[in-house]
Length: 250
Image (cartoon, rainbow, N blue to C red; front, top):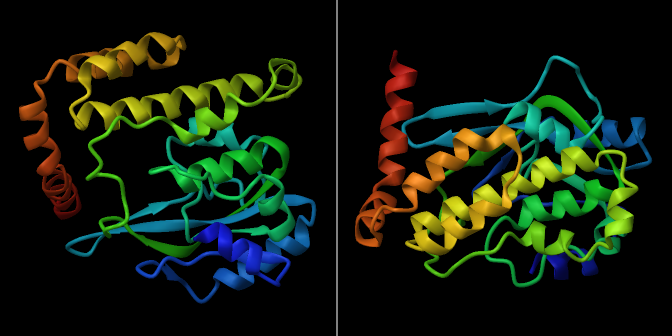
């Protein structure tokens, strides 16, 4: 559906706003300012807030360096520990979106992250630490109810690149670290969907010593019986909400 919107769009710059998310009044102004400052960038985005039930909010931003071209989109995600943009906090030139093939076709999760990665491999990324978007975290628009085994759509896309072309990238090490995070995300979802044995076999492909501790945790979780994991999954939102509520009330 979004790819159809890209094809039909007439404007040079395209942004998306999910029905249950919000743009703050400064969003368009900030995006246009980034566009004017960094006309060669292929992706423009701002900081955002995640809103949870009970008026709990978490600000997702990195303000210490101000608005800028990211030195490495993939490196910033690894360093900061969170996704830089969300589906309603970015804009991209129409030609860039069409040039990378738009959103991944057939993907059932992480469509936005995959699109950002597809652009960031080949183009500069501009960022503003000003919070201009609100992402409502628990809207019914995620893959939590999917029980089938999920592959990482970004890793599937990356596998289409010739090895020689990847070796020429100046940020290959950061890209590989980011790829490990994508694999972890898929493994985690598959474990919570009851695919512990298969997910556990995927852990062998993660070699980075940075994630040794995380790898051990995933191995332990993968042995939880599917029936018990189903109970944990069904109550995960409530447990996360309670944890955040306690932290905010302290």
